[in-house]
Image (cartoon, rainbow, N blue to C red; front, side, top):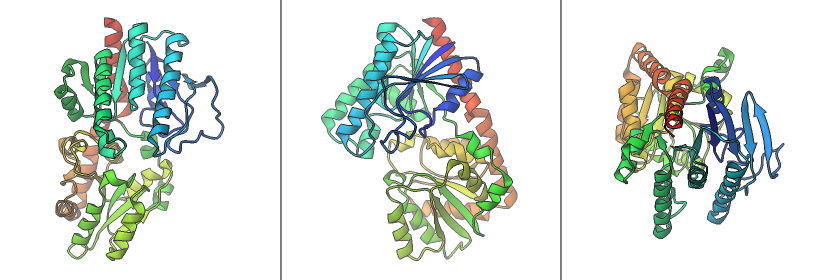
Length: 406
């Protein structure tokens, strides 16, 4: 089966559906061509070793990669961000309409919406069936993140989304909540499939024992949050929870690993309150994240209490489950349901310090054997339901179905 994979971002950029996804498709019997841009995310500058040209072709372990030109940008300027999206979409559309070999199926990754528009036009003019993978719900996330607040423009974005939904053959979403949201907006439920995301398995499992010892955490019961510390994570509530537990459960320590726009503010707040049970660790390469997850006693997921986040599953959830550690899930909705179904941790209410503190203390009181059993259930569930090979097999089944029916 020949698959044309359309995505604005691809390796060496940090993306969830990148080279590992394409490699696994090839391993499972597909012929894959990736059409993408020149790498510039997240800094907005073209990576060393690349320069923008009309077209560039690469071949990596059986995956054909075609790079087309775009305007590189990823800053706070809405105009430059739009130029980035539109320029890639235009190059993508020209290549796929006039230069790409005919495929059996097109896979299109969203965001941005402009890739979906190009895929819809390819469906219209070349009659190639399209699978549309929605990783970010537009226009909801544009409004929630503050990137776009104009209601009229948001309404236009919603109408374009509806056009893309009508044009494509199948829509893949990352959670049941995303599916329910699309159905409530008039999308045919029969067109929608849920395929959970997987994690960067190499960074979790290819961990040397020496690396694990090198990155061990201090004594105590360490609850680790790993990832971006921005406004969407709402981590001030976790500091409030740390203040609540420091006297009654002095062994508990909240560890923050990573960086982000709110990192310095969180550090200042923790210092001003004298929170000795809070530790900040700098961002580390992905190869070093796995040992730190393994060294923790429990792993924390937290997002703001927002309707959009109740229907999403933060990507770190899969990494935490794969690491085989208990999860403290402080995100309501689909993410909490996943942890409860797997039996791999405890849940708490988003932005509710008392609830987070209560769950943290409950975990700390559990016998070591119970904690290990939680972690094992999470890891087993990951391999059975969420792994890369499982997810790609489900994609391939969808590809085969729509290619056969065209």
